[in-house]
Image (cartoon, rainbow, N blue to C red):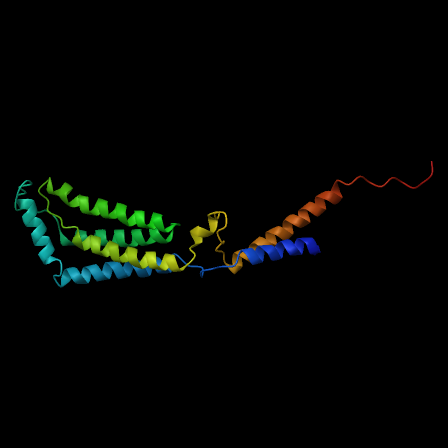
Length: 206
C-alpha cells in the first residue's frame, strides 16, 4: 500500500532532520587496534628499559620514610603484561561503547586512580609493584579510542535521545529502517480503520 502525500511529507521530514554529521563508527575492529597499540607500545618500552629509572626511584621512595618497605618483592614481570592486556583492551572497549566525551574522560580518571593507588596498597604487604608499564599502555589505548570515538558516531550514541536543538547523528541505514517502520505503522492504522468501520446497511427493501 502506497503512503499518501501527507505521509510522504512526514518521511521526507525525517530524512531532512536526521542527516549524519559524522561517519558511523564501529566497535570491534577499533577495540582490537587501540588495544594492540597500547599493549605493544608499553611492552616494547618496558623491554628496552625506558621505565627502569622511574621504577627504581619509586622503589627507593617506598623504602624510605614513612613507608620503610623491605627490599623484597613477589611480583613477576609477566603479571604486568597480563594486566596490560586486560586493561588496554578493556578501556578501549569501554570508551568506544560509551556515549558523551565527559564519560569517556571519567573512565581514564577512574582507571588511573585504581592503577596508581594499587602500588602503595601492595607495598603494605612488602610487594613492590610499579604501575608505570600498565598505566602507559592504558593511557595510549584510551587516547586512540577517545580520538576515534570523537570523530565518529558510535552505535551506542544512536540510542541516546538528542537534546532540544541538537542535531541527530544517525546513519542512512537507520533512516531507511525508520521509513519502513513509519510506512508499516501507517498501513496498520488504515487497516484498523477499515476493519472497525460499520457495515453499510442493506439496500434491499423490507
